[in-house]
Length: 87
Image 1 (cartoon, helix red, strand yellow):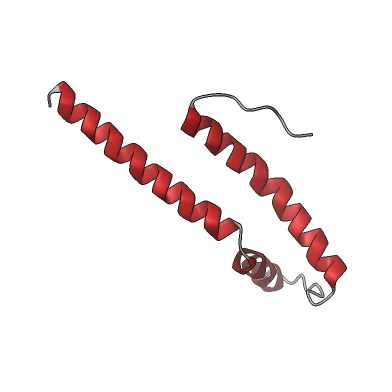
Image 2 (spheres, rainbow, N blue to C red):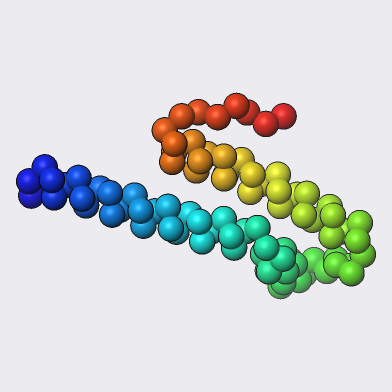
């Protein structure tokens, strides 16, 4: 491959990665993700009262604590810079 072809391959790969990351971000940011977590918990024998708003908030907060750092790392990769850390 020549240099121009290598650059195009790299560009296409990065574009596809960004598309997949966008899909993943959207998937992890909707109510279906929370419901999938609840379904998996039930499958493992842990049944929580998801109708209770306090329980919903706690679960959403726990999910956020896992998802946000992941998304920040992905953003850092995408922009090629380290972002300020969340407290």
